[in-house]
Length: 382
Ligand SMILES: NC(=[NH2+])NCCC[C@H](N)C(=O)O
Image (cartoon, rainbow, N blue to C red; front, top):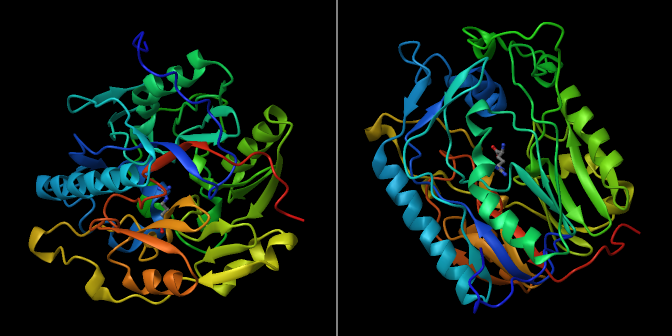
């Protein structure tokens, strides 16, 4: 509960990715001890992990893949740098509660080692003045938002904020759609074999969706739909948030799109490559584009000595920048090529080091949930 003398929190208001940021939730990585590489995890990261599954992911059929603690310490150091940079930019930084221990969770159909609330972009979308909790794909993440509840109640108690939650999926044996991969001719056996989850008779594909499948542009929201799990979620969004216009992006990526596309200001976006233009709404195809510059392998740490080499994120993770306002962006200092391009376009770049972005599946946009920005439900797609 708020202390009697503390200033009232600002009202939840977040309609876009680029207007002036006043308050943000920044994830944390304590107790990130393992990747629980069950079927839900393997399918979620299949684009990145398929080539290495069967090698490092489960060397002896074990589902828990221990993460060397040194890497988590270094990740926490880099997140502390991000917190300092945000504060120096005048942004109020809130944190999820800490898990306080390694957490094992169990549903009637499966069990999992819980993931800490690091990529807080994923299980929630702020749509204007509404907190929308989404429907996790990865079983290990199903209770992750519990640790954000103190923050959500802070806004809810202050008034002005609505709070909705998609139906919580059971994530039973047949809940997840493998269609995105099979349509590309890929064999998903390496993800689905050894599936431990129980069956719920009569339950097929469920609504399953992550917040990071959306990009917000005022009244318009782009939504990546790569399979039937997502299709159900898009319908739910349309039914429940009637003042917003949702634009379906047809399988622009397997799930998240924030390492493909980041709108920088009205009329200008950062895009992974020209191949992605065709997925965007017509009105956006005429925007000015900054394409992600090539980067060097030397900008990525070498993990061979640690024997831990599962990249769950792609080489493009650093597209995933966070805008403080339409002229100021926080960018990984280990992507100097992008910093250079943005500075030449007149941006003030705040460089923050982030070493292990490919191991924890997130960049600065993923690690943050921007709860208070100044923009409203503007019309940017005209
Ligand atoms: N919000 C996030 N966790 N985004 C991460 C997207 C990562 C994307 N799948 C890639 O490998 O590039």
